[in-house]
Length: 110
Image 1: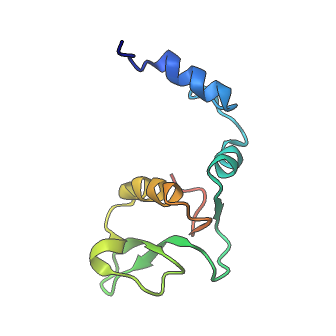
Image 2 (image 1 turned 120 degrees about the vertical axis):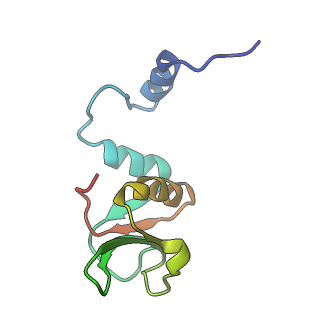
């Protein structure tokens, strides 16, 4: 028998973990951090496992860097993003790759 994944089924599984896809939860980031065992911080302490931050190019454009470690070893082809909207997938991957401390320069950014 095949099971169809519905919004109702997803909501039931989330409720088991104390989450909901419909309710705004004040401590949702804290719950995600506890569940996936990571810490998202905007305090740069030179020891992050992964870093996401903005940089300016020589001609004044803003680009975003998402790289392992503290950002000293950036690979232009793999770690630099022209569009900020691409960073959500990158952050998701960083969380799933078991990075314990993830530095982002703006926690309020979408």
